[in-house]
Amino acid sequence: MTSDTNLRHTDDAALAPDTAWQTEIRAGVRHVRDLASLPLSPGERAAAQAAASNHKVRIPKTYLDLIDWNDPADPIRAQVIPSPDELAEQDGELDDPIADHEFSPVPRLTHRHADRVLLFPTYQCAVYCRFCFRKESLTSIGRGYTREALEPALAYIADHPEIREVILTGGDPLSLPDKALAEIRARIEAIAHVRLLRIHTRVPVALPSRITSGLVTALRGRLMVTVVTHFNHPREITDATEQACRMLRQAGFVLLNQSVLLKGVNDTVEVLEELCRELMYRLGVKPYYLHHGDLARGMAHRRTTIAQGQALAGALRARLSGICNPVYVLDLPEGGGKVPIGPCYVEGREGESWRLRGLDGEVRGYREVVGE
Ligand code: SF4
Image (cartoon, rainbow, N blue to C red; front, side):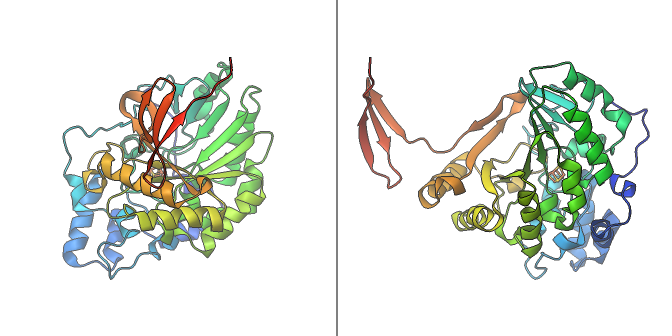
């Protein structure tokens, strides 16, 4: 991947005028040294500080306040407080699990599938998640937004008429100030062949106060906008996240959610069922993908087996309506793309006769009847 080291970069949050969401960031954990102020035992604190060397630390106050400090296995804590297990890297783990860099023809852009590109306006986030599969880029590149840094990527999109969707990811695009978002949106929508702007973000989960009328105005324009949120546990769904999602929905944006299956966080059918129901029924966010854990370094302690994930996906399929059901997927190494790896309901086939397992576990026959 080409670098953009010659450009001047600042922390994205520093670009924004003083706002409620900036105050939330400042009042939370921003540096490894801030871990000292958390109610951890001396042993836990030392372990968290040591583990933080592998990935940045940032936790807005709102998200920090969701943690139950009396529970060492708290699922919110598990997502953001560094664990010594992160230092135990395993053979087969990767810096770049889905080959973003290999498919990057210009800085800040990945073009893996013909009709869409990933665009990285920033490599900074409002919250740094321990399980992040892009943590290596967030650490080694780590730069924020500048107009100049995005020029080669925008020129590339303009030169490739097959590109229909631009996916803003990162880093978290919604950690950028409104002015930067409006500028990026306007530059993309000036490219006539782009139809859809997709935004992948943890902000509605971890920093819901960032979702403001100003942000909505910055994103609204010619393009269809889809916001893909990243809720992993039902305890992340609060009055504040509900209000944030309502604002995005009322703006006319399509809301989808992708979760990562994480051992000790959401690897039970009860937790996933509640998460999916609350996403759809309370937030109006369609559960889209349930990701099997990527091969990010130091994350073996949070990965389930695929067989465990299939059993969970099968149980969800039986309990939830189609609209509440996410697709269980694996993002393949070497840029193979996301493939569904949920349970298979086809038990066998002889010519036009199929044997299929129903949601009640019974195997039934189905004979194809097709006209000439
Ligand atoms: S917000 Fe997204 S990109 Fe940032 S650390 Fe979390 S998962 Fe990674």
